[in-house]
Amino acid sequence: MRHVILEECTSTQSYLEEILESVHNLELQEPILINTLRQTSGRGRRGNTWQTCENSLALSLYFRTKLPPTLCSIFIAVCVQEFIQSQFHTSVHLKWPNDVYIQNLKIGGIIGKVIDSGLTEGNEHGFIVGIGLNLGQPTLEQQNELKLLGAGYLLDQSFNAKELSNYCYLLAEKIISEGKGSIDEIDLIHRWHKSCVHLDKVVTISEGQKINYHGIFKGLGNKGQGLLEIDQNGSKKIVEIWSGTLRW
Image (cartoon, rainbow, N blue to C red; front, side, top):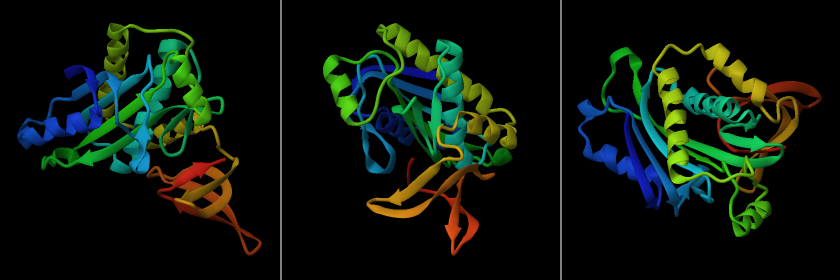
């Protein structure tokens, strides 16, 4: 794995995409990890920005996998949850489709996209994932900003630059090692369900200011789509949710 550590950058995702654009398709077999200590314009879902606080993990990773594209972000979320549990012995929860929570506070987010390099062996494809995780204690100013956003952080401790980069590397190693093998998709969805913060709870799904659905979140379909039980004319119906913002 090629590992690039940056003191500061606007976005690890943008930096990684620039590297990939400059590399010939046939050379895109090696995973590439970018992490930074300060990210000034991190990307979030749906065009939002992600604020990188002190003592946070900010990384982007390119790797190859045979996992269906719609399950890739679910896979990454499970890897993040299990990594936190194993490294810090702390339980976190997952929110559909790609957020990480502790109690009711968001501490991390995941964005990803498929990169088709033109290599089709075994239906393998490239994937870029960006991960932001508020791991340690932010500054007091940042803590106040997080409170206003309904967000938080994992641990009341500080980390040095070497430790943060090492955690990024270990997380990337877990993703790569599991992602290159044969993944049991049913087991993956089961692992995600065990950590879902809103499973069997009443939620709303919205696009912008418009609420599209209101119902009970019943879990994931076999391709990672959300399954929502709604009431339609007095009858229960399951609808598939492929995008949107979930609130509960």
